Image (cartoon, rainbow, N blue to C red; front, side, top):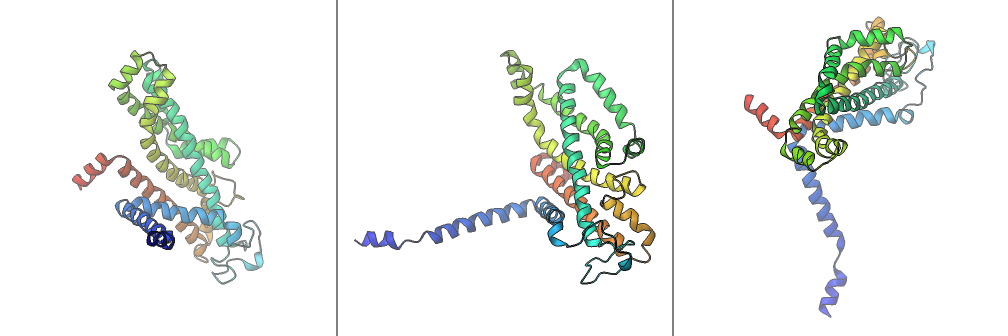
Length: 304
């Protein structure tokens, strides 16, 4: 009878609370061991949420002009003030993040995928290696900014054109990275064993070689994303990027340069958010590099 009473009186809530506390401690320890990943991911997550929730955070239209309210300082009605055409700076900054982040994500995905395909073929098939690497070297010899300006100038200004213009200079770097990994993995005994046992080339590439490129490609993709966001801002500032009617951080900064003495907040907030975004992505990439390649992290610490 006493044992029955003990079973009835037992409460699962303390056990669940203990398990939750244990998970919380594990997460806290992991964050302390990887502060750059934790800080970079948290900062980037906040910026991403702000841009995605822009319609809920601001009642204004980013394209609606109101000349009567031009160059108003920050107030309760306009949190970050207004620009030269009376548009709400807070709203345009949030919506501008959508265009800039879309360019960064799209360039990172496209450049990583194309570079992965070229690097796999170049590293595994020696017959086409010289030709592909010659083409990649030729693309790398052209300054990325000049190539992007030429492409956006010759074609119609659009977000798609900007993405293509930034992808082209980024592909050779990814392709050479993947090629170097494939050349190393190709000489491993388990790859030779797979060839001897009659495994097909696609099976060898996708089962034995491709998984080894995941870690460095993930790190490379983060740096490509940060670089693409910066290049998009460069192009938009120079008038060769996204169309002027598209609110991107680069366009906002370009529009604000003529009024910086009258209303510095027009340039301050888009520039600040742009810098924080690039910082968060770079911190995330640095942290992932140290996490996925402990030997490199130890070498860097020994040198410092």
